[in-house]
Image (cartoon, rainbow, N blue to C red):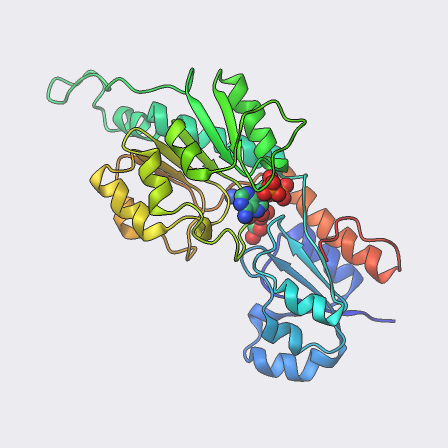
Length: 316
Ligand code: NAP
Ligand code: 8YV
């Protein structure tokens, strides 16, 4: 029996080919009239494959009366209306753990880029300025990670991998979350602003949700201060972005390394010209190996569901 599923947006060739082998796939983003697709195919669509950036709205969920499962390509599933799924008993899966190393690696890469000014150093050499008589001739001295304190907002699966790598760089690690984790060796701060006041670096790696919206407020960034650096590899929604931009412009916040933004792929233009900022287009998990593992989990969760087996990585 054919199983019909809806694919919300483009996915890797590997995932698309596995899905096409197993299901009749309806490609939402390619539909000339998406509403007509939902009206005509909606009643037979039993699954949805989507990604963190596309998600799945309540409107789409409600248009699919036969929907049983949404498989999300990404550990963060804030784009999927999980409330609407729970009301209907629709299962939801994500892709945890397989991306921890890639995201942690990217985080340290962005921290090193920011404090050692690697993008600027690269441009300095390419522009022929190294040793030039007309230019400054020598690249300015930089800061370093060694000996600094990093506060991790969200010491979860990825946060712990970031912490481990920061320790390898001889940094002190502290963390903030809703709960103290007794088995973790790092000092816990119940108060985020207090942690921001005590650290050199604040790394944001908690989920996007109504609860975490704007958690990194102006007050938190003021506590981090002109010598502090903010790293956001979680979701743009966790940070008060307009306040952050203004504070980076005035120097009230020292620096930022940003992989995520509130209205991706749009990035505030005011950030483009700032030298105290490193920008990345949501690349945390974007390695060949990790994206393959994430895709395999999407395919395996759907396969398990339709075969009546337990889901590998359910969130609802
Ligand atoms: P996780 O294992 O669930 O860890 C999340 C951590 O956040 C937990 O330690 C949790 O601790 C803390 N937290 C949750 N709600 C909080 C709140 N209201 N206030 C303070 N802390 C809170 O998640 P993960 O697998 O590490 O992933 C984290 C997030 O990273 C994802 O949801 C996703 O948005 C983002 N991400 C981004 C990329 C990228 O490409 N940039 C890639 C992967 C993931 P408590 O429960 O103690 O509060
Ligand atoms: C993905 C992510 O880039 O897993 C997440 O939460 O943010 C990233 O791994 C994203 O989900 C793909 O759209």
